[in-house]
Image (cartoon, rainbow, N blue to C red; front, side, top):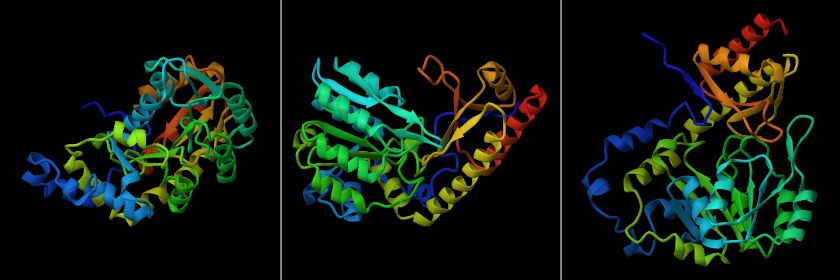
Length: 350
């Protein structure tokens, strides 16, 4: 029987959700699957938005739910970006940002993100210079950023927000959790910057990409978005129950995150010892690495033959010779490290 491939190319969390999440599915009854939510009768959108508001110390009215972070990103851009408006995104970012802007006929300006000695860095001066020049309607900031894995320093974020008071600023935190689980700053940012929306998801840290649950915290100046995104019959009650079970399982997820951090350190060492390879430090559940251009096709073929699927970039400016590796389970990560070492030995590049 042919061995199943190991997929380390889509930044999924291969450990899976907490045991309590499976129990929530097993105990689901007719009320979760056949009946609309009645949470509106209590003056809230849902049990999940109510719980998130309590956990973060914010009003429930500013918590939005969506079909994954992807849905909330799209809703925000579609709500505020008109044809011909400018949207700013990082140079190295998720391809979907451009796609959403194109759907609305927006004009995309890419602000610089630069490779540093150990990790990529936001060029804050470059971002602000372009913002002054173009007067963007929407600015997307991804932290940690996909595919580079770097974050925007909190002081730099505040500096950017203080200057971009005329723009809708979207802070995409889809990869929140892998570099720390602090939530204290959310309330302060939302209170201080009414034009800010912070978007997160249960897909990555909580390992529930298949259930498509996203959530966001919205500044008080974005009430139009609240009306735009309203779901008067409620949300997916089964998914909400599973998400609540995940929130009740912090120790499980902390254990997984600790193993991922250890495995990232192992992969940094193993990749960086190979001539022509360079792994960039990441606060997410993936690593971006430069590879020797001459080895790209051979490496891709070799790993595919071994049943290891990682992300090889193509037709991406400055990234044609980069790979992105999702941090899988310990066994999967060790298998990849061994495969990279074997490839290097076979090619005589060690």
